[in-house]
Length: 124
Image (cartoon, rainbow, N blue to C red; front, side, top):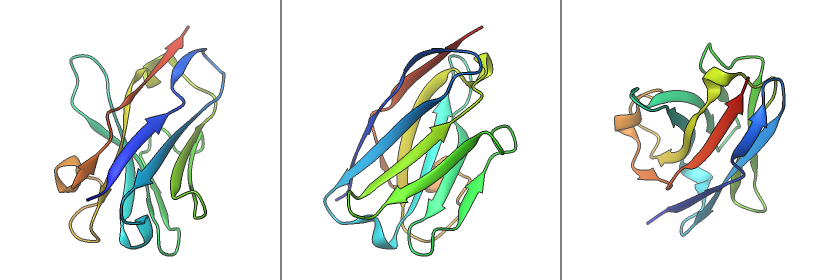
């Protein structure tokens, strides 16, 4: 059983940077896909970014491509989402999720494990 804990959210101004982290306990991420999703009030949960732990291939939503970077820290069993040039529309609760290597990497319903979420608020 994988347990995920996010940290690093907060309140920033437009144009600022913020880093959110996802630490895993239990089995290592070594065979998993790990993704970040976000959900704003009244909206569906949407894909942000993902990484295939083995090999490090990354995927991004068009809305964050060029601004956000997902990476992994093998030693700490942690996935990091570095968010630069933040915009007010990036405001949401950000969730870390992990899944077995099957199904769509973009679909939240295919993920098996979820963290509790961390709030990111970007003021204009």
